[in-house]
Image (cartoon, rainbow, N blue to C red; front, side):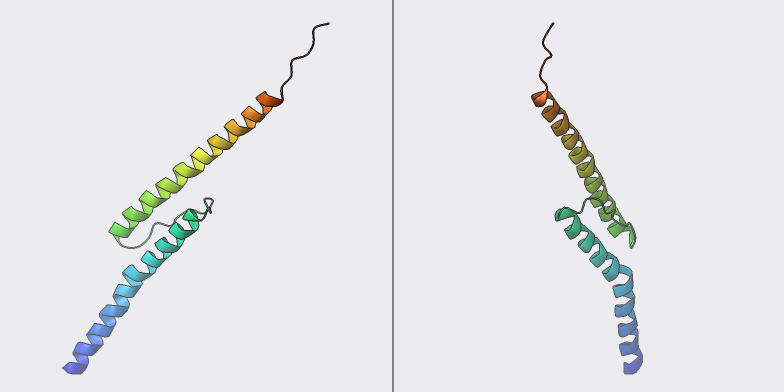
Length: 91
């Protein structure tokens, strides 16, 4: 009976690790990458439903950051063009 109890405890631990631990570590790694500036990497949505919701929220933040960064770069290019523009003299 003790052996069965220990075996079920080990099995439960491995199952929990596989179902929750791996996706949680993957989400953590993806979040750390994104916070370090790797905005081009999508965040995978897998694991338990709660983790999927968190991953989806983080992915949405990453996507919005990419959009805002792109818009900011476009405005910066436009501003540089405007600063370098000189009117042509009238002949």
